Image (cartoon, rainbow, N blue to C red; front, side, top):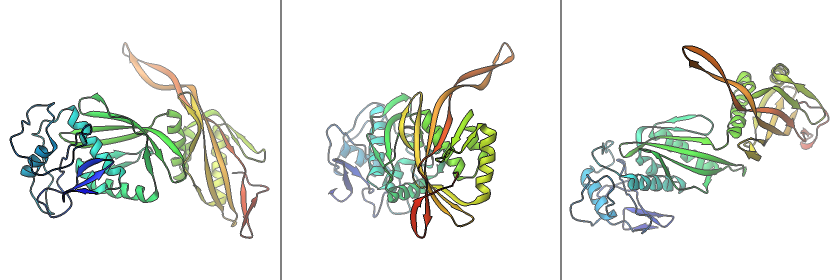
Length: 349
């Protein structure tokens, strides 16, 4: 729905998505800061002076839109506007965040990205870096088309000046759900950096393992494992230790042309102490055999050597509890036979 000609309503909030006086989508970062508690409708007729020097003042939406309009050029070729002279307090920062991510959630990535700096960086839970407004917009649109959704977002927490954090759940099309922590850093009045990490370290280990396997990076996958790791196949086949796993990976690569996860790792159980994660795998071998399996990872905190510290000019070893994969289990495995999936008789995956 819309309010006037320049605003959309998202979750009951009026959100400015077109520059007042412009002829198209907002290209210069219109800051339609919303007072959520009053859920005001957007207006563009506000008059009067606004004191922008007060860092914690809350101006009315109509006055704010008027100020932004006066500062902003119009048209579709607007340059990025440097509004660093504006003084925005904590309340306004939270309003920027709420509006920006409400737009993302509603599928309007183009309008949401107007709240980002041109060189904004977005770090995903898979430790990928998406750089720049255009790239972030395209990535978010692609994720929306895939069906990824965010749920149960908490309120933004001010952890230090210009840096805010919240928790939320990310739901994948496969229905796998991850709890993550999202941290946002401002530069002036625009979002400079967004970092998303799993809430639980055990999930981070599972995701790193999955990414490494997808990239055929054996060493990165093995790095996530305990020294005493065990790999168990459904038919009783077992491999023990990192060297055994390293050999198994080489054998798998020699006999396979395709291996990928058909679903995200989903937490069957997870806590600060560890967790159990499972996903579906698809495997195609060089002999034409096609296999499906369910893979489970068991992650547990183990005492491990971590970064050294310097004490009185000397390096000292440090130890800490680090989450590691202690067991990989391959459950019921199926094989494509005459166009039908049937229980496989011999397939060490």
